[in-house]
Length: 309
Ligand code: PYC
Image (tube, rainbow, N blue to C red; front, side, top):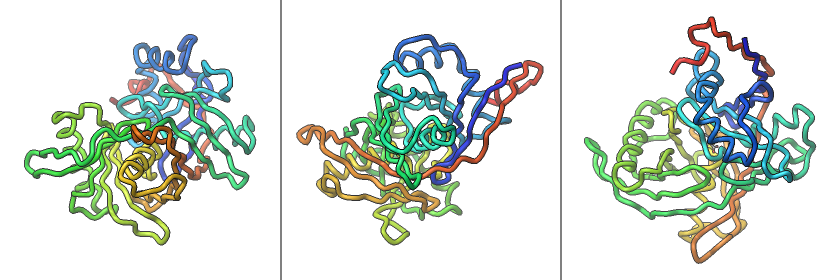
């Protein structure tokens, strides 16, 4: 029987489960090296932590690992119901609030190593968290894709730690009663984008006008395992900032407020890293709340010990 210690939290409604003890042995090296070992040798552990019956399709897991870069307070590998994530913005905010809850960090700046690079985080005195993400950029502007049985739509493809396809040409209302229709269209958009020149796209973002005073945009974000992000999506907001910067619709350091389908908000800003190539460094700010301290029990006599696939 294995005992796994976890702390659960949610960031703007999107849950994160941080594994603080009992994770698999992944060897030495960088966090990218450890992700390789995790993916190749311990995918059952991923499923056991986030899938039913202990988790759900919505849950994102975060395994704390020793960083390769000693200037980092921790390394972290994010995963969901179907795969591993390069980076996760809401998850990083959840990790920071979890580390603070455990007394492992104090307000101030810290560095965290992810498989796609080191991010700098700031725990503010009021508990909010800012994440200065890895460099983000757009690779396609208004690429036209054909969705079988639906028609053509255009969207931007951009990187913010995961790969995103953004479109506002969906004709749907971004409200919870429309989640089924939003999920269906976003999924078909992903399949079409993947088969029509953008095989790397793993998240689809349907954009809409803001609903709350002070917000600039609302989104519906579909994740790789077909669950929608309850938060405004940190890596998605990073990639969106790259698109806005490239179109000169948002100036360096100007505030951008992205709201989610739940109308929860992240604020974002960017600075240019390479203006010629359109590469920015985004900073996303949001809040998270710890919801549980728990010990998961993995017993081989349980037919669903390693999760329902
Ligand atoms: O906040 O970056 C994010 C994220 C990715 C998937 C779910 N949330």
